[in-house]
Image (cartoon, rainbow over all chains, first blue to last red; front, side):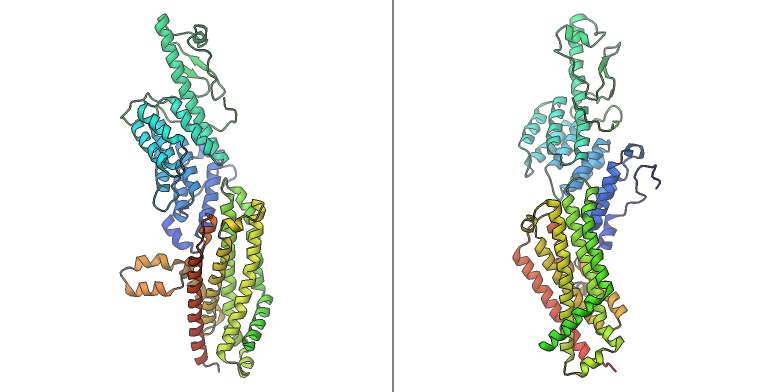
Length: 275
Length: 253
């Protein structure tokens, strides 16, 4: 592999085979592949390369060392941040199996995937309840499970969800992925609030505002929210609100129907300035 | 008893002079020291990398020392013809074997003690204190590893007393690897009584491995450790009895 190319592996062996080929040193082999996983996840050029081998790598690590709680969580978070939701759910579910760590964050993150990326609130609430019942779960999870149960799933809930997850992140890479999602949640919350404000303006004046500042001048909003990616919010001729840095929007919620993002979500490199 | 002690002392001195054993020990200590550098490559849970690599290095290199020193004990004496002056003296072949084995176990214990102290130093350097000696079963893991190496040494002595050093080392290594896999293989031999009996006859070396408990900081019950040490002691006793029976009948002319 040339140094100019992102870190990658040619081949990931099968866990069943390596279990028999590593007698007495299975944990060390698992750790060696875990270090590979860390390099694979941590390469800043990972987006060019893709993350196809992340699931097989962590599947292998957790076959060799079923108790490696951190591997399930890191893979679950990074895979979902890359839009590989089915793989994220699969590895998190594996961590909940018999004889495995079963951290409360696993079902919590599956709940988040259903809620935030798929818009399936009923399934999200079911997983949030499982998380709330798992030993060691933060007491706030029960409240969030209840909120998901009774609400239609507003972006404010996503912000609360991510603040909760961010609070228990143990390392820089996990925190980085969560910070990225936190910014996205803030963006969705701001879009929802600005859309509502534009609708109120339209109702009052019969037309959409030319500039978002008119929402403040007319007293509909106290102030415009800061754009979480460091850009600014704008409004087009049709009255649709945009972000100058990240214009990604989830499709409107349709409870009871599985829902995919309107277009593929693109992960952006971490920048430490949060609003 | 003094005859056995005298042979053990000679074995111990010989083993300390063997370059291969010393090289293996030095390499093990280097891997242990390197574990703290390797742990920097991960994020979170650096302790697990340090503890796992240090214990694995102790197990792998300790086993290799047991295999290569043990396989050379009797076979080397036969090959160099240094056995004949010894058995010409009023020393029974059983006393000779027990002396050789006691010297081997002393050598392995000393090597393991050095590796254990290095492991403690590396973990203490990472953690900044010695609390891990209380919070993790690392001492129990090294005690169980000592029993594991004593068992491997007894296997090496058995093969060393019936064949040459190279073949003895190969056979002992094969049994040591199989001993780590035997209990996993038994379920595949459910339908075969011979297969099950073979699996059960192999030493259960995996049972004497507490790496997972050290890495995940899970307690080890004293009764569990005691039972496994008793298993190892009985297995060694059976192996030594078999070695003595075979070696006593061996025609050394």
